[in-house]
Image (cartoon, rainbow, N blue to C red):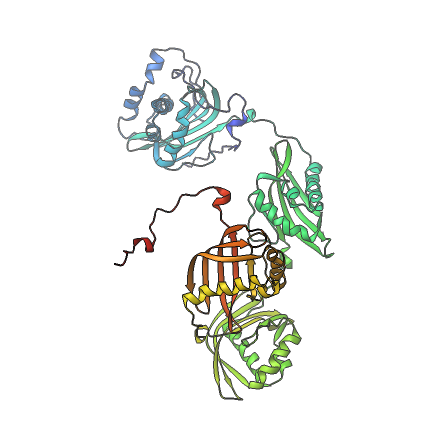
Length: 608
């Protein structure tokens, strides 16, 4: 027998019901059954108020019910309607114990509980118990107001309306119920229990028309026009989710949404809906379709597909979900290429080297190709720059061979990275290097979009230095301060140095910015002294970090600070690649607990 139970599941929380919001189950005495009704298509009974509090009620007392139902493995319809109804009161008595384990034991080993006030189906003992852990805190007791019993072969159902009195609050709550009972181990248990709120008691939703739904887009579009990311982010609900067109990262909070529009608004976008489909629900509505943006910054027009889900929140309609995606038919179909074919692209480039014509080599690169060559610090980012590099390199008559490579194939791009070796025909020298080629399909053929070639790093021997020499590098910088010449100080920094100064929020990332900082700082006539130093040395770099103190000659002030110097070997001398200077934090934030650990120096025994 296949039982098809169609139950409307309404996912509106009980909290929406004014008087019924907090509760679920009455503490009244178990009801008894008066009149038995028979429906046209099934045997059913209608529970009416108790007609007799002794005979009728005692008939369904827990222990009698257990004896009646546990008599052994009953077959077919060998259970009465009254016994089916009494199963509810076994469950209700379990509620009265306040013990969620006893309640969960009224269910089969593989039950399904669709609870009134939880969206989560409960399908095993642990999850059923978990639901009642919270529900029993309300001290619920139930009474069937109206019920219909059906008995089948090895199963029985009881469906209708019950009312609960919450002992903890006195609240009374009605709901619709469905119980499906089956025998398990000779005992009738609950296989399926579906409890739902009374649908006509659900609060009426906020009215809105289709035109008003479409008008919500204009509020969002007007927010775009302000070019203020916060204003746009405020159009989204508190738990809004944005799946943007040009970012893989879901934005699930205000900060994330604001961050996305910080960049997107630089395009000065203004949108227009081309096609819209609206659906209206209970305190929510949906607008999905196709929109087109005109980017004021460039004049570009871009179409996309959109989904807006709006909810009524804090007295206005907000965007709970916004999904924007590119038009899929405009996505370029991938040009097929095999790994062997990717490797053969190196052969085309190598053949171009053999022509000794720098233009033919440069023709192997894409229109926006980037070459980071082995023996030049200058990135080559256009055709003339690439031609210029190979004009000199080809004088060595190079011919290459891949020794080890790894290939990745993507959508209209491919990558080949590894180690190659060149034999220089002009000298007979052999040189190994590391390579990365990124190829793109452009103009009907595969071209080099990015080519990075570098020397084998372990070939470079590190510049030898000692800890004392590293510490002395500070004195070179300090001596430059003494000149009061900002140019002399700035020259102590490497070509790509970064200075994070003590009294400026602006990172200084090039010579001019570093010099600018010291124009002002040197007016204080600073002279530094290392108070505490920790040195570490690496491969052509070294580090000196600790605490230093400055005496300001202009005022006599003394200032402590924390420092980090990272030095690199550049153009035959040690230069500052990174300098981070900061105030002593406890001076501003208050004392911090000192580490309860002895230093190595403290633990060393004094020499006699």
